[in-house]
Amino acid sequence: MEKLNKKGGISLGSVPATVWTVILIGIFLGVGGIVLAEFIDQSTDATADTMINDTLVSLGTFSDWMPIIILVVVIGIVVTVLMTALAFGGRR
Image (cartoon, rainbow, N blue to C red):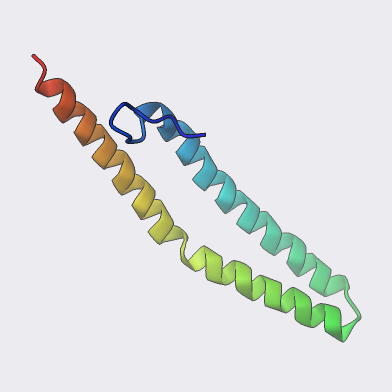
C-alpha cells in the first residue's frame, strides 16, 4: 500500500515501488505478446486463433497507453519532489 504523508499525498518513499510497477507492466506486456505469438503459431483451431488474436489486439491497445501512463507517473514524481522541497524550504 502507498505510504501517505500527513497531508494525504504520496511520500517519496513510494517512488521506487511505482517505478518498478511500471517496469513490470512493460515486461508482462512484452512477454505476453511473445507467448501469445508462439501459441498462434502452434494452434490449429480457428476459434483459438481468433481468441488469441483478440487478446494480442487488447495487449497492443493497452501498450499504446503506456507512454501516457509513464508520463503521468513522472509528473506525479516531479510534483511530489517539488511539493516536498517547497514544504521543507519554508520551514527554515
